[in-house]
Image (cartoon, rainbow, N blue to C red):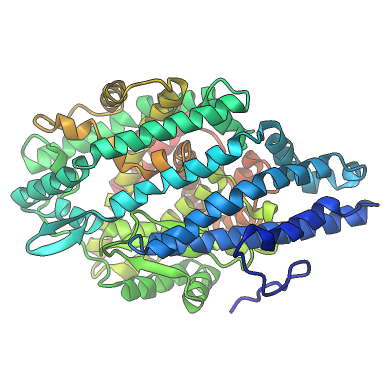
Length: 566
């Protein structure tokens, strides 16, 4: 069991029932005199403790709401925080930021230790506007509606009511008529809400654009680059990534689809992309949430004992909700808990190989939380996505050393590994598509729903292989962007997956050469939290933060060689 750090500033039984409970804690920090460097560092520790407590309170509200979207009390508890508490925190947080940067003793702080933190604080001050506080609350309220809409959708397959995640398993069924039926049912259900989601998205675009304008930016894209603290790359670098993916990855995906077409013996349709081409039943790597957990622990123990211990600790502290069920929000996540340092893994397992990937992915995030838990300030643990996703995506690959625990035969494991590696390559064009879509959306905020749909269709062609026949289902393809919850809930959080995937492939390449060294570098990099620039953290992991066409080409050649070995 992990030792929870005792509070030194806040009352032990503090509970957020109203702003009046929290206000004295914030006001004490605003008013406290700082007379020397020691006072300043003590002030920073106390502020960190308060931020960690508030962050974890919000985390639990979000976790409980997503675990049961049908419980209105849980939804109201979350909405209470984002509408009543967060708007009060924002302006006082700005006061604390200004108190810090205006403090006489700030120049006495260790520059190397606090550089990343202070850089972020100064950027927060630069973009904060009082007028955006109610808008942020409204955005938070609106964006959570996506999970409520999608989380409640079910379809009937073979006499059973299934969530969309569960029904998606039929897309791997060897019976083509069953795959087509599942595809139609799932997408009919989604399309029944297409207009509702379009209207929601229109509202979110308008609100987000207003936030950007208020803060003095030309558009929400540029605002988000500042808000996300993207100090290490620019929009132009994203365009470089898009082009490199189109040049070096799309041709490889086309090869996969040509092979699939040849092995199946017919023109590919949208429901033919996940079925096994040798007509084998879909792999079922586990039977239940408890079986998934047990096999995950055994898998990770084969890679590193510490990784297994992290998951066991989370289980002991009831920080896992793994199985798909009606009323549960879609997707999966690892939610860091800033105060107790033991995160929560949420996912919608439905006994598929994709669920194994999700579990070890979120397990990588969890290990990251554990490895950075002893850093002095909560802000030091608050990593940008480019670093957080390096942790999770690397774990997907290095855990191959133990993933045979999930499969009955070496042949099944080889098949799962091949599916995963091909999936890594196939998702890169999707990542580029989603990111380029967002750049266009937020630099053209007055677009109509029809213009948005047309642009999405063009992008789908730009990053597609031209080998999948969507005829008769063009209306479905035009709305496939609505499957991506990030667009609704966390705008611009997506290209990080692509950047981190490249880094993860580098970690795995190192792992295959020297396992012990690669694991050691991985753990050392994650232990840094966010105390170094992104490039330095990647270097600590033994890889480059690089998305040039040359670098991507070398990684694609490496993956292709590994696939050929299978």
